[in-house]
Length: 309
Image 1 (spheres, one colour):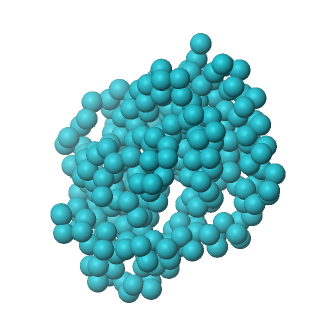
Image 2 (cartoon, rainbow, N blue to C red):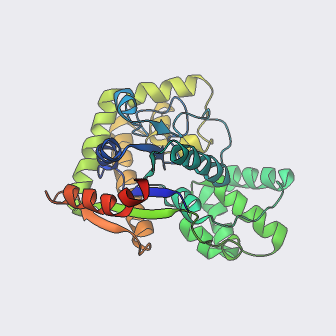
């Protein structure tokens, strides 16, 4: 029988962590982070990781597993998450994949077929130099010219994945988007999507950014910078880190950096909505409605309790 897997997804700041803790405590669940930036150590405030107290309440996995300068791919995430799902299921607990990084989550649930292409060190160096010289947008445009589907899914600052897509195209002569696809899911899935009115979500995002600043985000980025983690690393492209890094390097004022973090996070939330809205299996719940939590409880119980008795 395929292992059970509960997905709790939605945009940043919508309340996924709070709900996942309640559901995990009620259904004996363990949380696997579905966030591409929470894997990095020492990046706590800006990635909104579950607190130490929350992690004591419920076991969390795939948080703080690599240093910020360690390369990390969706394939590696896929393998690690699947391993954790098997381990959690073997303990008789409910695996819960919770987060907002759609590509990472779907790679786990439906097993994107990833083409095996050996690393081309020379090509990667050439593309990195091109991006340094011409800018990330110019590199993104190069991908758009040969693989517009992949380019639409990738942010221009996501240099590592853009280079990987160009590397695959260079090796195979085919767009990366044409040689990947979904397989049948190896899991007994239940998708729960969280939403709220957009103006309220944007207000919560702005408040969260202010809270991150108050909690010491600037000092966190300073410590990372002092340890030699530079702005071209994938980890340092995370929203909040790149803007504060620019502020620390004198490229903008502090108010400008904070404003950019808020704008960037709102745009990211919009992209997250767009990604998850394409998945028809998701049951959507407006978290501002009082009845939503009880409805989610009933849905989870109806889906999983019989298979866990």
